[in-house]
Amino acid sequence: MIDTMKQIAHSWILDLKMYEPGKPIEEVARELGFESVDDIIKLASNENALGPSPLALRAMKHVASQMHRYPDSSAHLLRRALSKKLGVKPDQLLIANGGNEIIEFIGHVFLGPDVDMVIADRAFAIYRLIGDMFRSRVISVPMQHFTHDLDAMLAAITPRTRVVFIANPNNPTGTMVNNKALDLFLRQVPEHVVVALDEAYVELLPEDQQPDALKYVREGRKIIVLRTFSKTYGLAGLRIAYAVAPEEGIQLMHRVRQAFNFNSMALAAAEAALADDAFVRKTRHMIQAGQKLFTEYLPRMEIAYIPSVTNFMLVEVGQAREKFHALQKEKVIVRPMDGYGLPDHVRITIGTREENERCLKALARVLNKPEPQF
Ligand SMILES: Cc1ncc(COP(=O)(O)O)c(C=O)c1O
Image (cartoon, rainbow, N blue to C red):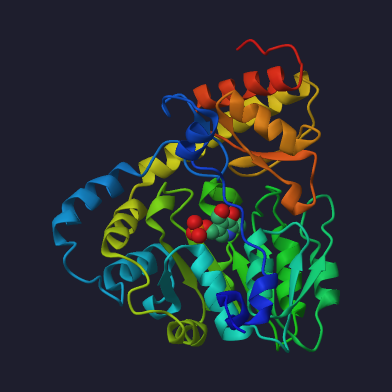
């Protein structure tokens, strides 16, 4: 007898794990019985603590009255703006409903039961989930010093490998591969492999430290660069991102894209945000200042961390799930890292000065350390 939907579903669906997102502030308040959400700080999802780009906010208000219309499925204006800014052709750009959707497109186009994909063991969690979803074999290569080991990843490529994912900088480790290593890797990668280079955090780096990955697209390599408006531009809730790839790769992904995968408010906001240089500068400044504060105070408190180039860092608190709950009671939401095989680490997103100080104080209380004085 068939009396459950589970019996009708593909059996392998039942084995898929679900992604554990950062906890929303409202949920924590409900669970712990806090009356207000106002003084809870969320440092759990690598969002921009400054809020959305002000130019994006203004653009959203402006287009709100047009929400009875379907979006421009070609994203003409946004692609034109990106094309100008990045020095690639509009046809080398694809707009998506967040970077995660692009990762899924890559799955649709290249992965499947007879296919291997290569990732690093502590790379962004979605790669494995998508690999599993498309029933590919996921070859997971240990990182070295919390950094992608590109030599080992190259050696792990099999004749069945179609995709290698590299997050640069990587979440949750906050580390980068250097340009030379990436260049060497791309030069040696076999012709039957597409490299997916995830640059979700790249604009947060000081300009002179940003790798020029788009040159590989211009050279026509089999590469898909992924970027998002969620982090630097403060638009995570809108869900908008883009891929840069040779036109052929973009066309393949168009085949698996729904016509209206992104919405018109997100299009307008992203286009405006792209021109908001002042906001990007302010964001970078906040992160640099936050990095400085954490890297000054954590050692004083004798708390170990992994040096990070971006807006979050792995902090070793010991029995992190427990500390995560204790920090929530202090109204600070961070992210436990047991899912990444790091049961002693939490990932802390860098916030405003006030948030960072509150986080450090809460950490001190939870870990029985003397409270820092700022
Ligand atoms: C490395 C990395 N790639 C991609 C994403 C996806 O971002 P979004 O789907 O919000 O664009 C994230 C988000 O946390 C990330 O950390």
